Amino acid sequence: MNGGDLAQWVGRSERRADRVTSVPLAALAATLDRDEPEPRDGSPIAPLRHWLYFLPLYRRSEAGPDGHALRGGFLPPVPLPRRMWAGGRLEFHRPILVGDAIERVSTIVKVDPKEGRSGALVFVVVRHEISAAGELAIVEEHDIVYREAARTDDPPAPVRAAPAGATWRREIVPDSLLLFRYSALTFNGHRIHYD
Image 1: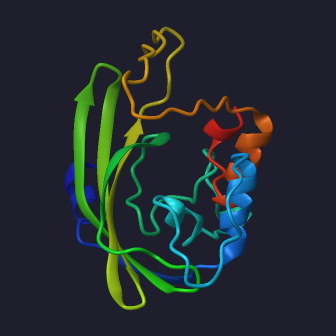
Image 2: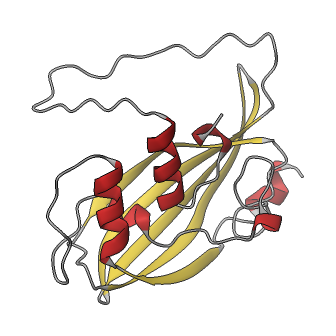
C-alpha cells in the first residue's frame, strides 16, 4: 500500500463510551505502590488515569504479531511490522470524576510516510477528544510510528538521561511484576511490555 492509499484514512473516526469506575484506579495505585485514598464517586481522577478506560478489547485471534490489534480496522493497514507510540500532546479542560459517563471520539488527522536513517517510516497522528458528563474534558493526540523490521547491524538507540532540576522526583524501577500488572490494567499486549 502506498502513501496515497494510506492518506485515504485521514478523517476516519470512531466513538467509544465508558464509565469511570474505582477499581482500575485503585489497582493502578497498588501497582505503582502508592498510598492513595480509595477512589469515591465524585472525586476527580489524577491526570493520565483516563488511560485506564476505553480499553482495546479485541479478541486474541484479532491480535497482530506485535500484540496490538490487527491493522486495517480503525488504524490504517500500514505494511511496516514495528508499531510504537512515538509521542503525544495533552490538553486538560475539566476534571474527570469517578462515576462520570465518558465518551471518546478518535480521529485520524495525519498519515505521513517518510524515509529515515533506519529506513521507511509512517507516522500516524490520532486525535482523541474525551468528554465527561457531556463536556469536553481532555484533548489528546497520539503520534504512532510504523517502522521496518530491525536489522542485525542496527546500532543500539542512544540512551538519554532524564532532565535534571525537577521540583520533585520519584524513581521507579520497572520489573516484570510491574510491567505485567500495568499491561493487564491497560489491556496492552504489545511485545515491548514483556520482551
